[in-house]
Length: 284
Image (cartoon, rainbow, N blue to C red; front, top):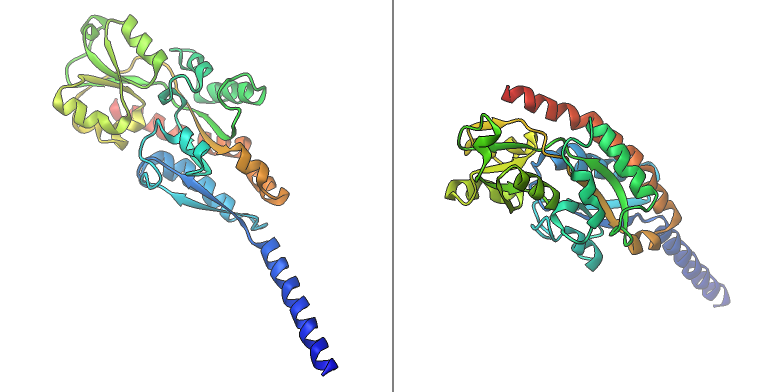
């Protein structure tokens, strides 16, 4: 009986040790939300490749569960708050769509400020790493990118600046709004997914957007005139809840850091910048 009892005790200890080891080796699971469609060029060329790289890391320390198609929230404006509320751990955000939350980002949206996406991204990253931009205190910024120059796309001919006066135009942020206002247009803040219907109804006559979005959201179906005037860039980012990041095991944090801004930003420039250039050529 003593031998039997010892055997049972040994098995129990062994099982507990095995369970503890298995738990220690289990990946840290994170949720990543995306407001748009899984066919969105930003998702397929930037967000999803980043998620795939994390999940394929040899350490196996992190597993990211992707929730595209607005599964955790369809509003681009709401994405930063979803991260803070714990609805998702990670999200793709457009700071310009959250007025007041990231007040200093507006300077990055000034027209003709940057000569290239790479230059804009370098400045954006440097400002983030030096904690010079307000609003990011509760986030860990994983990817800090700069959208290409916004241009103007509408339904009626736009040959000179005088043709723009009085036009109702969809804009992407406060700085873009002030820019088009100075050119005599009427700015209307609107998400890109609303543009097609708004132009169809006549709520707006044109939109300020980047070339890739013109085709991505089907805006080319309701517009017939392109006015290539650099109306400023827009910062975009992938952010993570800082409290969740701090709660991760060191091995898991190391994986997130490994595929942080340096990796993600370089991937964007490699995959996305040539795509936008090709869209301009397509218009010409």
